[in-house]
Amino acid sequence: MTKNRTLALSLTILASLPAAGLMGCTASTPAGTMTVQQPPPPPPQQQQPVMQQQVVTAPAMMQPTASVGSGSQGSMVSQTWTATGYNVSDFVSNHMTLRARQFANGFIAVTDLVRGMMRHGERRTVVAAVVGGHCYRIIGVGGAGVQDLDLYLRDLTGNVIDQDRAPDNFPVIGLDRQLCLPAGMGNQSAQLEIRMARGEGEIGVQVFGSP
Image 1 (cartoon, rainbow, N blue to C red):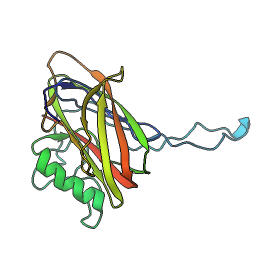
Image 2: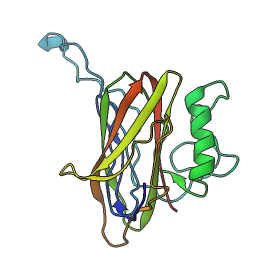
Image 3: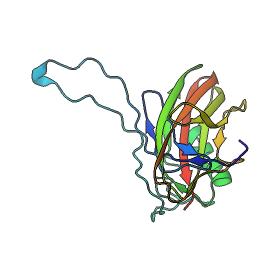
């Protein structure tokens, strides 16, 4: 994590966890939707639309709501902020709370806390769109059993914009190198790849944007 770049993101989480967009500085505004594979549809007369497990749906939103400290989308991070579903005994929500207070204080949660289970070697991609004029930080948390969780932010052609490949379970993008989208550029798109480099277990990812 070292230079300045632009990022645009609005998480849409696919079968394995989604990715976010950016372009030189920071990205923002992701909407995440985890797609869960379902069994074949029933016969025509009872056919129902394929169901998708909604993990996060976050429209571009850069103004904090009154729910400061709730951890939900639109809340502003402060030293009293807690992640969605916070419980001190829950590793993912507890550590997302601690990391966000440390690395995203004063930022707004652009998505709720997105959670999922991943195995060794598994990759998940999040397609994202972000808003011009804002900077972004993406925080990942790997729970018990996760030894190395990595994040790669790519543009839509697959080029890596930024990454955190440190051998730990707490990757952060947009900290050492600012991820910002210049004003007037509108929405941009990119992909956030979440990779379980070593271990297995529950992971959490949340995107934060500057007000």
